[in-house]
Image (cartoon, rainbow, N blue to C red; front, side):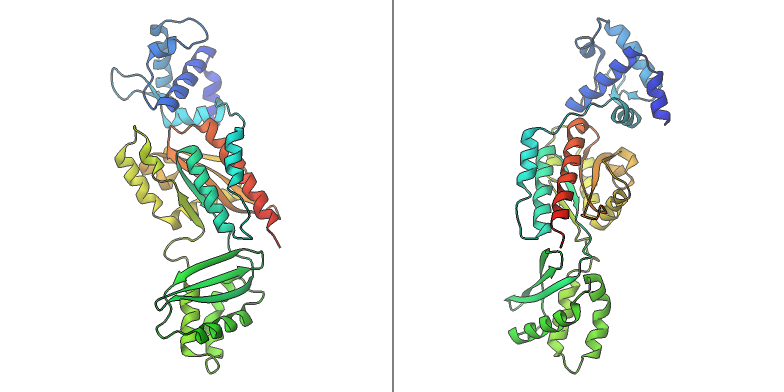
Amino acid sequence: MPDRALLSDLNDRSREVFRRVVETYLATGEPVGSRTLTRDMSEKVSAATIRNVMQDLEHFGLLDHPHVSAGRMPTQLGLRLFVDGLMEMGPVSTTDREMIEETLGNDQGDTGAMLDRVSMALSTLTHGASLVLMPKQEAPVRHIEFVSLAPDRALVVLVFADGRVENRVFTPPPGHTASSMREAANFLNAVAEGRTLTDLRSSISHEIEASRQKLDLIAAELIASGLAMWDGDVADPRLIVRGRANLLADELADLDRIRTLFDDLERKRDIAEFLELAEHGEGVRIFIGSENKLFSLSGSSLVVSPYMNADRRIVGAVGVIGPTRLNYGRIVPIVDYTAQLVGRMIAGRKG
């Protein structure tokens, strides 16, 4: 890659200055001055010498300075070069491992609840917003149940063949009764065997039409409105976003950038489609600034890793989003470890 070639062109002093500028910027969020670096360099050099090196790095497009008299900060190219060629990643700490592992628990097949806790833990550990793309709901449906909560609220519960249990509240048709709910559930359970939810949704209208004389009108409306809750037209139900408030906690946060990012995070379907791109390759991927087209206007970075099921097929992804000055050396191992752990849990729940 051209970036790698550029790194090999730098001498040892230029590499060290560049690395220290990036590491200090990632830690503080502030441009780094030459006098700051004179205290940390492995060899004794003057501030004037460091300024000359910084100017050369700026000429290469690796550093920039926001004001004439200010220090330097890495450009997007500089961050990419640092992440790919100079970043040192340590192991996930024992404390971080324990916090992630404690979220897994035992939800008797409720993958959604487990992944929601994983998402919360990721945002807490990384001080960013977490994104978790749940496995595609392609397991056959084992059982469906309707539960009345109030005259205008009901619950539809789905149990899948892989043990996953999901439920959603919906508005039932007027006049529904316990009898019509039993009738609707019995009808669905009779036709759902061996079918995925996608298959069931696509064929249910035909099934209802064929059984119109045997099926009560209200029961038919219950079926239609209940299954509609799993239609992804409003927001992709596979995506969990947690920790947006963390993005506001940074004293250096650019509120306009954060506002733009919040608007982006509301477009769950777009995010889910973007994360699905990560399902085409193993390992952690890092998108910095405009490299990530979805969040390019907010200048954010995304660290994302896919996870696999028991068949070694990639079925979802976990990630963290935040400012470009993320602590990549710590966050990348955390995201990688979390993805591997989630994959093992998903694989263990098969069957």
